[in-house]
Image (tube, rainbow, N blue to C red; front, side, top):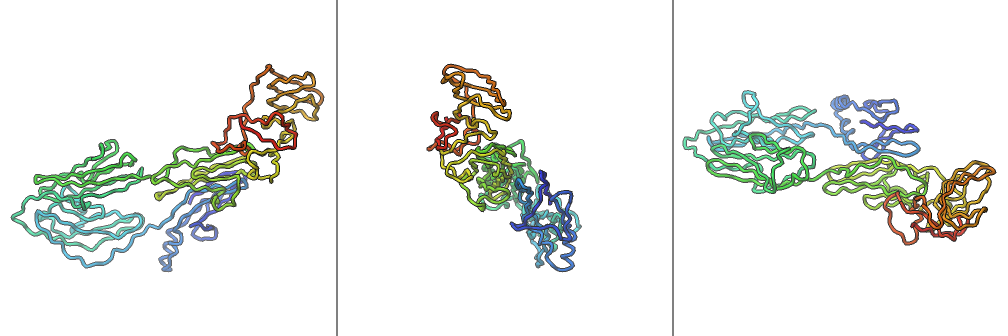
Length: 515
């Protein structure tokens, strides 16, 4: 059971089984890998042997659905579910088998029908000489193991034994079955008859990526010949093969385009028989496009995480935060889920976490981990609310008088007043400024790169009379202007600007606008 992860600090590993905590320590049949690994090994041979000696079900106790999590102080990541099942070889029920009577030239069937096990068995037949029965154009084997004779010969009379081989669990056999063939001096030809699958129409479900197997078992004299067509289009020649004397059609790695109507045609000198199969292709969940594993954001950014998976039926997304289902985590106003999308608004450092998206349909589940890391800068002061960004009234923000580094506020691209002030430390600021200087009173729009030292100010300024080239800034979505709705992600190419009459040092609440 493998589980490996890396992080700083070194992550700790936890296992769950069927949704409950599972501790692999202390079990004599479990061995941990060590060296900071979450991987462990179960000696199932020893478990099964102990179960047989004690007549207990100790081996069955390890069956279930496992999941590993790795966590440190910055978050938790998960593995996909791991299903553990025991390989089983059931006993063949004892039964009294009557001889099968057949007439020369006519069809015959020997039934096998092995018991179900896990994984499904491989079925084969042996005759009275303990030789494997050779399949040919006249003798075939159905999907359920039955042995079919399109027409029997006198030489077919013998004892037959059906075997079922279960991988990892052994082989079992049915009691011998006797086939008796009576001579028929008046044997005449007969039209083809399709005996498997039975009926005029049938349907077949296959998963995308799996092999599609269609079988057509026929009877008749002379032995009928079998061919296949796709009624709803052309057979995919690039990945289709035929086996068992054309009675079997195999499409490797089925795709959605392989869905449609297929027809088996069996014919001899006496006529033709048809069998139609409608194939439906469904799909386990699969990712439409790979996403980034790590997202890094500044304070007050917003992000829209997408869980974009496809499948048939359409998969359903479920979100986790640090391994805990979001629908079970405490509700907060800054986090919302809308189907395949998870929106986080007004981020700050405390919201750094591991998020997981799990996409499932009836055929399977896939899981992806993503890190959301928020840079550790101070937050703007929020008017009339707690420190939680989710408590911010939409469109209302109190502008801080200084940026996190102590200089005049240019963090949001706000209107500022720049003077030749002194500062004990050397500060470099890149701002977009409408400047009123002590040297000249000019209402000009300026793009300035300013370096302020303890006693001097050096300004490298490019000025035009009425225009400016504004430095694009990120628009914090948590303070979208009143009436704005919807988020498209974390990248906002608009400029962020406060009303001109509002000073950044004013305690009054401004109503910023995304331009």
